[in-house]
Image (cartoon, rainbow, N blue to C red; front, side, top):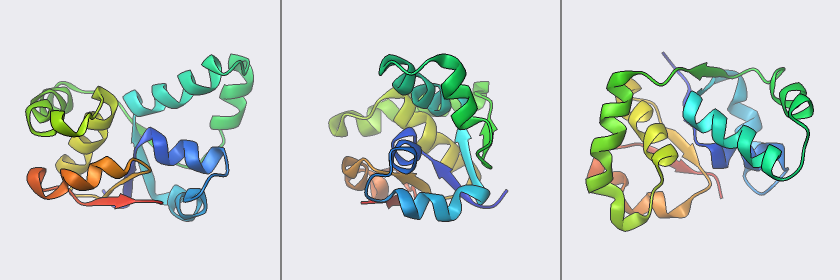
Length: 129
């Protein structure tokens, strides 16, 4: 596998045309996202009032790949809590990082607090803004 692993915050930055979103658009063809982080993106727009059918229509044509949440990734994401709790990372954040570690690919995020834990967990992290 090659490319990058997207956190929900990175994909949201692209979709909402926020700072850093153009960088994400530049790698979207070679990007992966966990099903957990994809669910975060869907729930963001549905919670904001966008009809589910419109959310699906917006996301369906995007050329990234979605990785299922499997047992090994879930186990690693759970174990990362002890190493990342002081940075306030969510389960979704840890799923993104777990995939990044498993695949040896950089995790792309808009969350600056990830920078404080990158060396501690041995992850390659690219903060988009």
